[in-house]
Length: 197
Length: 197
DNA sequence: GGAGCCATGTAAGTAGTTACATGATTGA
DNA sequence: TCAATCATGTAACTACTTACATGGCTCC
Image (cartoon, rainbow over the protein chains, first blue to last red):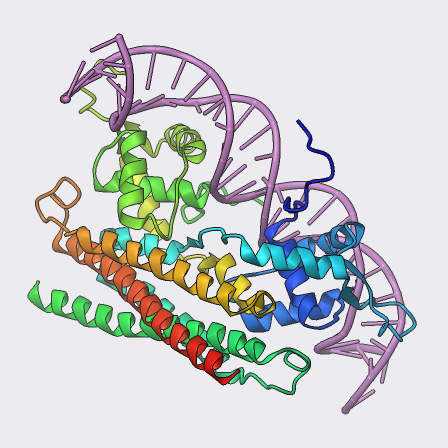
């Protein structure tokens, strides 16, 4: 069934994390540790990358020829800084154009709230307050990140790169604020219910 | 090291999905298929339960003595309706009181947006529009669910049960609306950027 | 000379999805 | 009688996390 030499549009199989790593290396060369940091800082709350995934995936990316040790690895060579190859940039571009997997959420706190009436109003209140703290922290973190057009993450990228970063930040803020507003609403409703009984 | 007879506060090990199933059975007796439906309908967009998890977990729950075939299994016995045992209600209550796992998100679309400047403004726009459709669908679904105080899901539960359902619904709506608002904002910003270049 | 960060990895375990398989019941 | 829905399950696979292990560098 093979139509030889015509597999240009078949994407190599990488885990989602692998693609993410490739994406972060497309911004600037980094070692594994720095990739981890960058992920945490910028997309940490909707995409995690643990070391248990990171280093094996770096190896895979290299084997596929998508990344190569950077010229800038001036240090003794202990830590290796990785950069995209031309082929890496190519496949990344193609990956970006195919439809993303639908977002997944696993929100145990919300599930608990669904049944928390069994445990009484105090349990419900506690669940709401936990959300508030978490959402507040998320908002503060996102607010602290001011996209610096001259930082290593933005330099030598087009103006759209700054835009992309801003959009992601705005998204985090929008959702965090919505969550906080919901917390207020929820507490009010809970209090009202309490008065009636 | 065992202090005999004093392990009252150790919770049995179930997967998060197992607890969720137990929670849904605490509302009213159901068979596996119905649990799946109920989960989809009410918490589907932040908690999924696949059959590959569901049926094995039902078996575990039974082995632990947390659920038992319902008296209401009037049918020939082909499909079994499950209900909580007293012990099941007890452990559920304790599970509700311990702190929920932090929410997990895996949002590939957002990650792509982060790098989508490589692929051009059209790719960015497409990612935003996909989010819009998805968020719209989510909002419409949540809006359609009017908590019915007399339905099988609410009957014989206290007033707080209706409250809990409403809170979850409000949460879904709040986040979906925030997402939609962000989409508008994002498209505007993208258009502005386009004019400048 | 010790605390804390930088840096790289591996092994075992967990939680979950997908695809497959089967068959009964119901309504058009 | 055929399609759709109801109903129950298993096997293989995937992606990810946690815990562990190691060691260098830096600043106080």
